[in-house]
Length: 62
Length: 508
Image 1 (cartoon, one colour):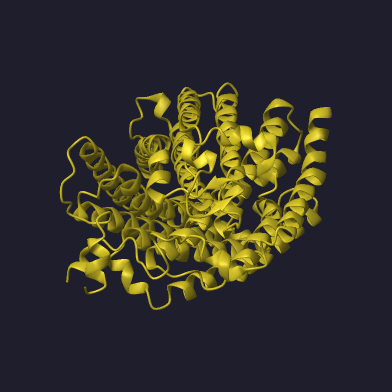
Image 2 (cartoon, chains in turn yellow, cyan):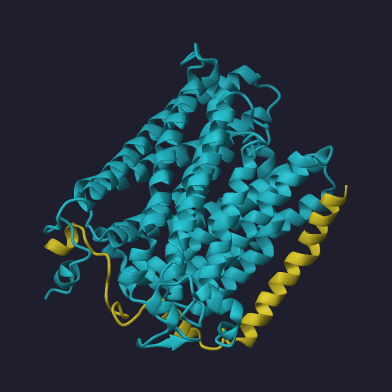
């Protein structure tokens, strides 16, 4: 069953290889170097740290 | 990645972006020639495709909920709708599973993923029309599949019941969406990756691998004997853990900091959580076959990997808890936070229950009982669906530029589904355990065990009805929101876009 062999081979070899490549790329690209900077990525100039963005229900009317 | 964006291929891809962004003309911060887009511009680019995914997903949610109610009633009143053979329990229960998994959950996941990816890549969605077309074909595939199931064409393979003539449409549509997510990532204007992007990228790559492999090994060139069961549970369990879970966690990691305006507690922990999930989850599925005729080492490895899942679960739980510390009161004010935190807590509970259920001594009691059904709903609904509801509460007003019309419907939605799922999971978990204990006692007749479950199953129908009430409230609010898109803008009842809410919250 060549198709199954191909898929099993892909699962066993290709996927771990892709994962290792991703990890190597991330390390080389400095993705793990500045965790404090990465943690700030959801924020920007228009919605910086400290700005709450979804407080819309009753509590804010008191 | 800036060097990559100099290649001719990247330049070709960049041509898909709107003029100012793709050309990199002006702007405050640039990476590789691509200018960071404003949030409003990103939201506007996602409007049509994300709305399509959300609305069609919600349509399938209502259909799936009604099918679930019918199936639930049939469990304690088998004669219900007995005149229609196409509404038999096997058809209805299977159609429910497939409508909520492939119709609702997967489509909403894609909508949320696309929006999150664009926001974190700081670019508008390139060529949104293409994604919309993929969505239309995806819905065609789900429709053909569900109608096929109701006609009796189910494959009878758990989580892969759609007939063979439907799945190629789904696979091709999904592949197109996955490729487009990766294209969006390749065009990003922000060099650094946020942890949510790791989860999203992994999910869009893992799912076609799972789906394609299972299709080939179970339907196109089926393997024989117990290997079918092994492949089936490898697929079914990984759909939850490597498709829905990463998207749910990606959403939690984005929306909690955005709503409370505070970065996550520890970025290192979040990355550790991602890589440990990637390493351990893939091995978990065989724990569904404890006691089955498979090599003992396969099941043992799966049990060990299931216990190892404590690492990502605990890291995620610690991170979410310490990020929220001092901000729990804001759940009263933010529908997004309310649903997301409910989902995050449920993720921890579902995972701990899953670890316990994987142990041989526990599985011998709970397997083949309603405990497994309760666990599946704790993961798929209390965790994942609640997180997706929270994400939609955040995204929809921003892409439609309209506020939520009704606070009352938001509250009805939350309390309907929160009470409904608690009333579903807690009694069913307990009943499943008792059911398993009785089934393992040779002095108790099987019929007595069945009769013991009846009152609990009626309670389950009540819980299901509460969920339906919540769903109808949400769909009503969304429909009202859409009607407002065609009206002139007016001062809203609830205020996200005007900034008044933040001002009031700050006591200014």
